Image 1 (cartoon, rainbow, N blue to C red):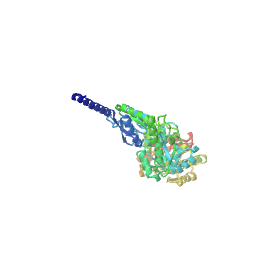
Image 2 (tube, rainbow, N blue to C red):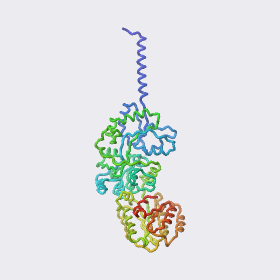
Image 3 (spheres, rainbow, N blue to C red):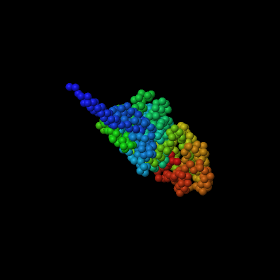
Image 4 (cartoon, rainbow, N blue to C red):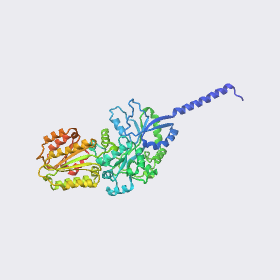
Amino acid sequence: MKRPPAVLAAALVLTLLGTLVSACTRDAEHITLRVLASPELADVEPLLDELEEDTGVKLEMAYEATADLAGQPAASGRSAYDLAWVASDRSFLLRVQDSGGRLTRPESTAVMRSPVVVGIERDLADLLRAGASGGRISWADVADAAAEGRLRFGMADPRRSDTGRAALVGVATAAAGTGSALREQDVSCDRLRGFRSGQTLTGASSRELISTYVEHQGDAEALIAHEAELLALNASGKLREPLEIVHPDDGMVLSDFPLLLLDPGRREAYGKVVDWLLGADVQKKLMERTFRRPVNQDVELSAPLRASVGNALSFPDRLSIVEQLVDDYGDPVHAIGDQVVFVLDFSTSMRGERIADLRAAFAGLSGADQSATGKFARFYRGERLTVVRFGGRVLEERTVTVRSDADLRTLDRIVTGGGFDDATAVWSALDRGYRIATDAVRAAPERPVAIVLMTDGENNTGLSYEEFLRRHERLGSAADAVPTFPVQFGEADAAALKRAAAATGGRMVDAGLSSLSDAFKEIRGCH
């Protein structure tokens, strides 16, 4: 039967309306989210088409090296991004905590995990393992080898990279040796100068660092990065030989690659993305593609990831601690060694057991101390060291820049081979130390300089304390930049040494509470 034209027209209109409604519904369900992402997460990009197909949510990734999501949220209160996907949000959350309520903690979901570890050329790894306690390489062993000049490494810039910052926190936590999160007192002195002296490669992100390493494989024997990145690098075929991946025995910082909701108005779409990413099938794909460990416990680990993560180190709970740590480490591209002026009492009262203790302390700083604290505190390549021996006058002075073991042997000869004097001119010797130090400051203002004064007696000749202060004041701003750290030993005048420390911006250490070696280690890196 032939339908009337009016009926056909109505049917056509209904069909067109249905098509339009269906199209509009699909458009309404399709959402684009702008994501600020760590550059190393570019390896998940191939999975994002599947995400869009399954959820209707497209992630528009903007890769930027950022350690604490600086600038998020924007000053206007509305973020330029809907989400952030980073290796770690710990520094950002500390910034939120420190904001006095100006910033709100965003919703955050861990997506994958990977510890910050060390990839080392196999021959060097074997050597380090042979000398390590129990054959287990630690951050202390890495720092010791770096200070000695046996290990050169690459690490992303902690000022700009969340991976570099996690690595720095891990090493510093190991150096503190407390087994817990870093405290203010743990970063009051920089314990990482020797470790840092081995850094030869860096980058704004770990992705940039690894690219640089591939192009300059002869410039470093080790890389500090996420386990996942090192496994991927080994599998890439770009290396002359694979790196051995070492999980330091004294612990690692574990990154959990969280996805953060910066715009609360996008919560529904965020939920779809999170649910998709945490599904067992997708977690397995992420593991196989990126070598990161799944957070979904139903996913069986692949063979390269079955090694235990080991001891996960805690992140500091205060922003000021992280900022101090990063400031002390400075610019990896323009590293410069410290100068320390040791002003050492060689009066006759130092004979016997006391001079033996002093010589043992110097031997320990030269590498003989194989404890974890000793490895972090040792003299390092590029450091300038001055020894001023004094009695009633300056008996000898010598400055060396540590380039090899021969320079350390030179220092050893000065400390072990010198004679003694009957008098003790503490303030005259310290005045001489300041003249050396201020010359160093004027010659290289960027080089940190400090004085360590060690005496076992009271001043009985030469300048008075008051005259020393007058001379110190006349030296001007160059002297103000140099603190003195007196080490009280034996019958030294503690009150006078405390006054000198306070007047110069340093602090006194009592060797009688532990040992001379421990006292010297306690003030290593203090400025």
